[in-house]
Image (cartoon, rainbow, N blue to C red; front, side, top):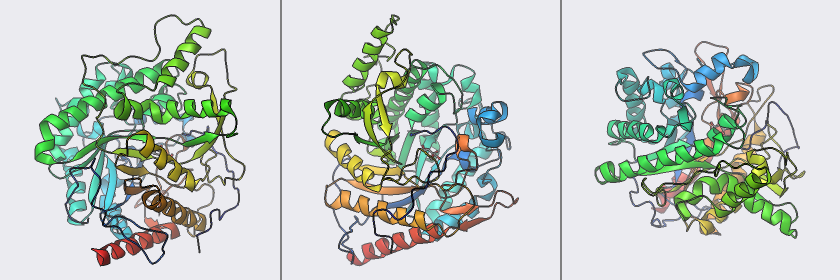
Length: 519
Ligand code: BGC
C-alpha cells in the first residue's frame, strides 16, 4: 500500500529558521569487520536484513526528560537558553517538563516494548550526573535513574545505545568558556570515563557526541541553539575542533582502559544531507557539491576515517576566503597538535544521522562577510519534486539515504554503519492516522535494504527519530517527530501510538520473525 516513491502532496509548512541541517546481550565487539551475513530474504523479494540488525528508536535527554532542576540536577545550557533567551524558542517554550521521562520512564519502556525494538538510543544528561560538569560532585540520584533505565531495557531484551552528549552542556562549564575553551576536551574525557566506568559493564554501544556540526553552526555561528553564540566564521570551527579533540580523548580512554573488559564500540554521530550537483553536467555545481559535503559530513568524518585532519578542500576554501577578506590572524580552522591523541581511527563504526537531501550550486550569499556559508560557497536547494514534511528544511528524499550510504562506503573504506537518526515531522493539528509518515518509513526502510543488498553497504541498524513527540529545540513543541504522540497538556503526559508507530512495530515484527525462521 505504501510502496510508491512519493505518496504525499508537496506540503510546505514553515515554522522557524530552517536548519539542515539480538534481543540477547550479545554485541559484536569486532564491529569493523564484516558481519556474518545471515541474510534475510523476505517474501518481498526486495528486502533483506542481517539477522542481528538493530531495529531502534532514539531520543535525547533534554528533549524528553524534564525534571530540569529536581534531585540535584545542575542546569544545562538549554535550561539557560530557554529561560533567559526565551524569545529564540517557539512561544518561549522549554524542556522543563516536556515528556517528563525522568518520572515517567516506565511509560517510555512500555512504548519501546510495544514497538518490539531490539535497541533504544538515549542520551545522558551530563549535568544530571555531574551537576557542575566535573566528577568532584556526583549526583547519586542521577546515577540511579540511568542505572534503572539501562537495567530495565536489558531486562526487556532491548540493547541500549548511549550518547554521552546531545547538545546539553552543563551551564557550569559554559561559564568557563564551554566548547570554545581548549580545556573542555580533557573535561569531556573525564566525564566519558565516569560513564564508561558506571555503565560500561552493560552498555556496549556508545556515541560520544551527537552532531558536532549542529552544536558548532547553530549554537556558535547562527546563535539559534544554545548557547546562542553568534560569531560567524570563527567560533564554529573552534567548537568543532574541541569537540573532535574531546571525542578522540574519550575514544582512546575507552580503548586503553575499558575495551578489553567491556568489549563495546564507540563512535560519534555525524549528521549530513545527501548532496548532488544541481546540474550534473556543470563543473561549478560539481565542485560546489564537493565543498557542501566537505563542510558537513567531511568536517567530522575526514579526521576520523581518512586523514586525521580536515578535508583539504575545506581548509583551502577557508584560506582563500580569509585572504579575500584581508583576515590575517592565522588560520580560522585550527590545526591538530601532534602532541595530542590522534583522531584517525577513533570511530568503531559510522554513526549517521540522515534527514534530507539538497541539489547544490555555487553560493550566492554574503561574499563580503566572514562566515561558514561564505567559506563553503555552496548553496543547497530543494528539488521542486521533493515533498517537504512539517519543517521547511525537511525535504523527504528516501533514496538520498541510499546514495549517502554508498558514498560513505566508498569514501570511508566500507565502515560498519548505524543510522542513528532518521525521521519525518508533523506540524499543525495532530494527525494520529499519519499515513504520510507510514509511507515514509516503508520507503526509507526499502532504501536501507537496497543499500545492504545491491550496494553492499555494511548497515548494522536503523534508529527512527523519535520514540516520542518531544521538545524540538528552537521549534519547541510545534514540531512532532514521535512514533508516539504525547499529550503535553495533561500532567501524566499520556503516550499514544500514531498509526506510524503501529506500522513501524509491524515492520520490525515482520523482519525479526523472518530472522528467526532463517537462523
Ligand atoms: C537532532 C535531534 C532533533 C532532530 C530533528 C537532529 O539533528 O539530533 O535532537 O530533534 O534532528 O530536528
